[in-house]
Image 1 (cartoon, helix red, strand yellow):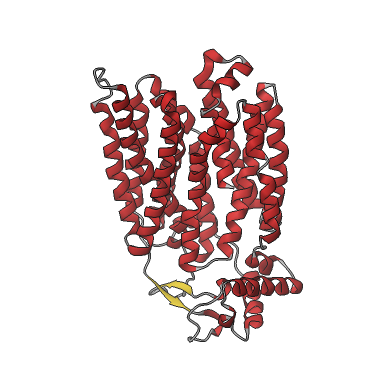
Image 2 (image 1 turned 60 degrees about the vertical axis):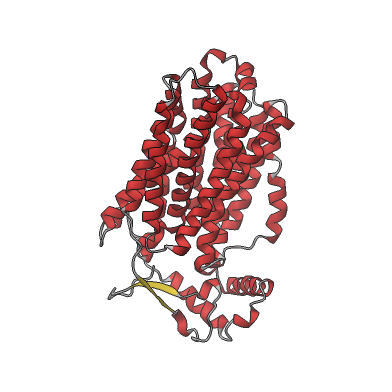
Length: 454
């Protein structure tokens, strides 16, 4: 899902010339590229909202299927559209479908994992985007026309439809929205997962009763907090402001720096694209390392790394106008100071997406995450136009992203992981050190008289 999304947004940087010639927009190349990328990113924004709202009534697996079918149809139409406005419209719809797919897909694997496994899965989710970046040059060299490229990135979705046969439904969604028969489906899903992982002996004898209690708990949960209620509580205002500003800065930076590599010269596009992909992967693993080893201070590690990386990226001004410097050496230096902030942004962004909900109590988690992500995607629409600054100076566009890294790093440092302690719900025996995802220990804030579940 992430891999397809990567190739979808990046192919414009590889095959732009043929598209511009197709629509006779040579004189407006940079504005054309920014405008088409804008509609793709707008589709990502709309798709995230639509996918989230759909999952309130439709199961994540069915939402995933709807997104796949629609993406194949819209992708084919986009590839063959010869009218510029029609092309942009279906490019936007294709992005909507992609966003629906990875939003619902993430909901499924988050629900079937728990604890550190869940955190690791979410943090490393972005590595598939990076793999798509690395594979992009090979794809662009295999196809010689932009229509073929679009077909090439659309039809692999058929493989995902085959994998859907082995994709389980969201157990928690079934319990909350289903009936008595769905408890049997949930039990089957969990037991099948335990059997695959050789953990059937960890399932307690009263597992069925625990599922029924969990169903009653989920159905009786109070309504999620309103947006205004997110601002009330200890450090809530700081966490709201910090998370919104940080993720907005990082997500603009993450996409914008990737689109900005063409500023370093088309002759170096392939190695620069691959370098960016590997720097993103390194950033994701750094986020996992900080989270596992420095959990309490992981925000400060990620924020400090971005502040330092942003300052390093601003060094591009020192040789920006050095005309006597060898061109290859200059591009090499550009890429070195660009990949360091890219790794920092990837590190902080994946960490925020994976762990930001931990700073809020249970009834505020979902609206908090939805608000932060939606706000960031709104600001993401500005990323293609920041690259126009390269017309003034290559260092100007890169410095803009580096200052965003510094801003995001400062905001990330303001976030704090609450002190928590594990409690085991539903009278699970203490001898069971490993629980299924649905009966895993609940973490509560120390000193919270209401025993608020996080």
